Length: 117
Image 1 (cartoon, one colour):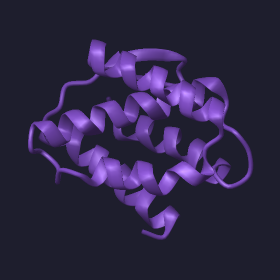
Image 2 (cartoon, rainbow, N blue to C red; image 1 turned 120 degrees about the horizontal axis):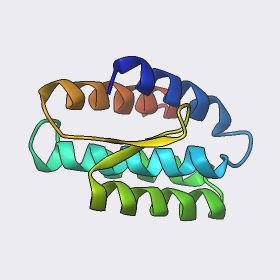
Image 3 (cartoon, rainbow, N blue to C red; image 1 turned 60 degrees about the horizontal axis):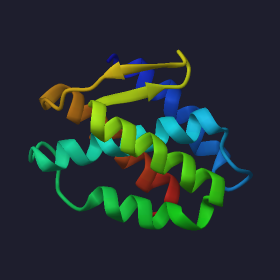
Image 4 (cartoon, rainbow, N blue to C red; image 1 turned 90 degrees about the horizontal axis):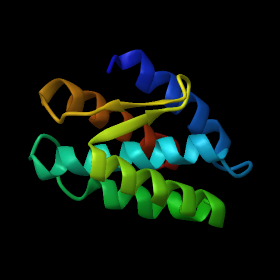
């Protein structure tokens, strides 16, 4: 997956957080991203525990439908080792390696900055 896919994905999500619920596809994409981030943590390619920290900080900004759709995206992403790229409207394989997890870390860092963490 190219870095530009992650950037487009997060530019769509981050500004929408304090304003309104995410679209179903964006929330599914976010959930699948967090499943990928957990895989990076499990493989010790990024620091463990930060996904939970970001999700905890994000929680007040999520609607019930956001949470349900993110859970669905997380479940499928974890099961199939894929992420949903909302801009392309398709699931793509995700294999945790140094390069992809470096990108994941960058997105987590952006989230923390947006959330004031």
